[in-house]
Image (cartoon, rainbow, N blue to C red; front, side, top):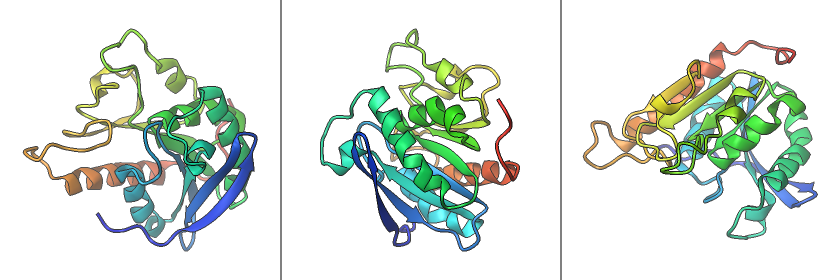
Length: 221
């Protein structure tokens, strides 16, 4: 995977503490893609870094958003309501860039993007490794967060993700599958595709979907 270009860092105050946005600007941006991280890691995740490296050349500014708990060095994520509050407070800084903002994230960050999309006026939602249910607990579904986003949603899911395999998602979900990928899009060493190929498939799927999104504001709910 190519290294991401040097980012421009911006600190944004929120009721939960300072958040941080790392900007990876496109020369002539058509969209801003804001990506939050999961509950077990930060913006160094391989999928987030791959998108930050690939998309600016395709007219998409990528903003990697660090929640205040990560900026403060804490190890445990707070309750979902606190995550939503911080994301909402950071949103004006994302919208100030000018182009329509696609909300997104991986795992817990994807849930935040879905839950807040309608209220914030997100152009669309990109859900990476959406945790459809806890591992081994399919009855504890979070499908309503996806179906209730109120804007176009793309799910990118690893074929081996224990938090929800692609075939478990509701009918009608727009979904791109990463063969062999787990919850972090890691593929086994003996998989049919390499790790680099898995990330290439992910970035191509996201770039293609973003390219098909209409210009202008999101549709009215």
